[in-house]
Image (cartoon, rainbow, N blue to C red; front, side, top):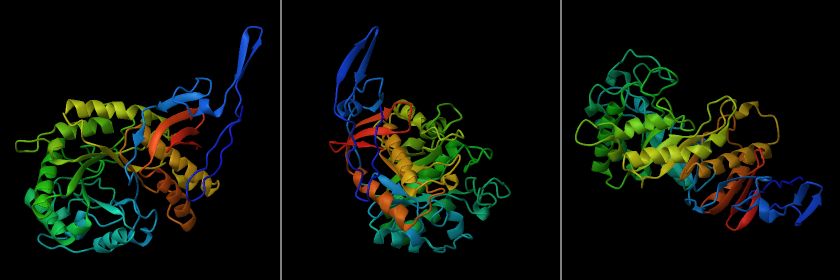
Length: 389
């Protein structure tokens, strides 16, 4: 039995099907069955065809698909959302000394996003060396000493956030608190302090931001490794932050409206099928911390081990792989998901393909996602139509 795959045009995929036929043939002790497309796209898909991964309909956010692109490339997927990390300046680039603040390119990035009708997520990350609690500490992926430590005085962080919101607040839709903390200098951690210090920083950031823009939405803390469940995983790190004291009368969970995570598969094989387990793990820590109503966003996902720079096939193949990853984020319970384009830098053709899928998924109702056998293919029902990716 074989299935055909039609590569989608810019406007989205076309309906895929297998020949409509159903019959049972008795051959001694073996019954051979031919299936039709209603089986492939059914929430009760026969085990001989594949596995059901999503059987309860999900209405996706109108801006479900997000990206990371710099100002010069903000045309990529207009109308979605754009995250600043690695695309716009960090705290230490805009606050070179006490009381001194510079644009460093943030204004241009925000202007480009708004011109493309993108919502913006500004990620606050990177303590200036002069403000760092450990100014000689190494480990920052960008080479700035002390950048992954908390500030010596929270007043310096508050001053930066106040300036940020007074200067750019009208163009910032969301603030994200930090990036990929592991509370260590080892293993690519972007934060070497404790979960309690990060919770105190969250309280400081949100208090200062809301004093300028009361309606600002906040998220945190962008932990990676949530495809695996242990104390030393993104699930554990997120749980630590949610439960950590904020240095006053609250907890980390009190200062975020949205839980942000990174849905990378760090196993050398890009086994994104692990996302099928992620929703239950994250739901468990949400329940434990009493925050079941908070949505979860993947503020970064991509193929990174190995990344797309090693791919030599047609661009349509890459685009199909990425739309499958988006669908796995739906399976994993993500309310939004943003592509970090490692090995897939923007181009006109890539934008055409990506924008077509984004237009199809944003605001869509996904009522079924089935994995076809043990293949990477997904059979989906989106807005009442059948698609095979």
